[in-house]
Length: 125
Image 1 (cartoon, rainbow, N blue to C red):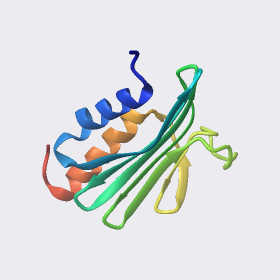
Image 2: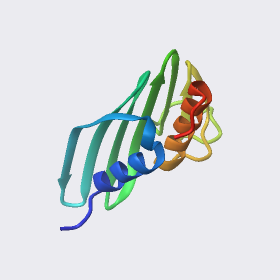
Image 3: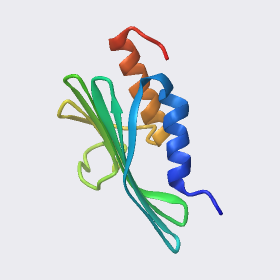
Image 4: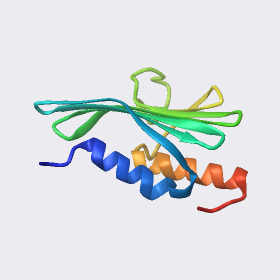
C-alpha cells in the first residue's frame, strides 16, 4: 500500500512537535484518484493546531494551517485574497494582521509553532 499525504503529515507532526503533543485527531481524510484532502487537529497543553490540505497529483493545491495558543492566533494559507501582499496568494495572519509569507510549507509552519510554544513555556522538547 502506498503512503498518503496524511501519513507524511502525521510523521512531520510527531517528529517536529514531539513532547508538546496531546491528542492528534484526523477530522477528515479522503483519497480519490489523484486527489487527496486531509484535516487534522492537534491538541496542545494550552491550545491547538488545525491543518487542512487539498492535493492534486501529490501537489498541495490549497492549504490552511491554524495555530491557537493561549491568546495567540496564527494562520497561514493560500486563499486567493489579499492581492496587495507581495507573496500573494501565500500569506499569514497573526492576531488579525495580514503579512507576506515567504516559506509556506507545513514543516516551516510546525517549526514556527514549536519555536513559539518553547518561548512561552520555557521548555524545549
